[in-house]
Length: 280
Image (cartoon, rainbow, N blue to C red; front, top):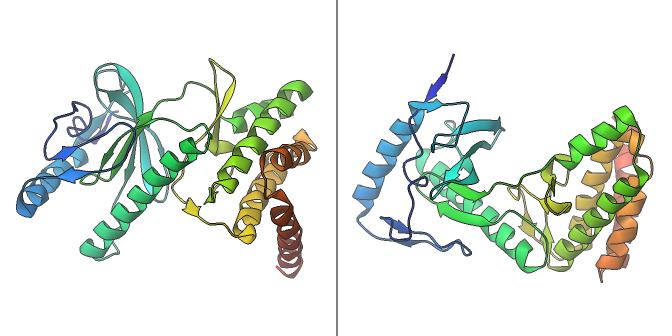
């Protein structure tokens, strides 16, 4: 049985640099609107109607959308972008319990924040998927499809067939380096789990994804909590990987110029976490 949710994503899949009513730039999520507000609203209603009827197929090569994942805030699709280039489309959907005007403003604000954080991370030398387009009407981001497994799948594989120490050390070093660059640039990912880290097949290169909760901060506390979230995820999901967090922190210390204040805070955050666990 095919799910019916609509034909194609009409706004992004047939995109070119003169698309109306919005002009998209490849490397910068700036948007330039034209046309009246009523026309845009009418277009939005039509596109949402199309989306509700969309047919999700098993193959996204013809421009159709293949649903990969749905979370509390967004749906993630695989499709093609401007011809045959594989891409990921992330749609932030509306929340019915919110007032429509407030919902639209909040969704757009979070969409733009995610695009900005992704772009900043790349400037700091952190490898992320290339951002192709931002659509403020459909509340979507379109970015590069990264060919390769998640770090979660690799580490779970270690649990089944035994740990490849050399490969684990290499991945841990790349994770520590990426987080160090991110934090020194004043960015907090806020969802550092192994599901949000991919390993690009062609270059064995770590790619950080999903900046939906990311924000700017220079506070050691925020950076420490970022590391603590990762530590808890590793302990709960990848206990067979032993001291992988120690290896990540060792790489973090080499990569970050501000590691001392962050790791001091991390010790305090760990203490608070233990107390919460004991009290319940």
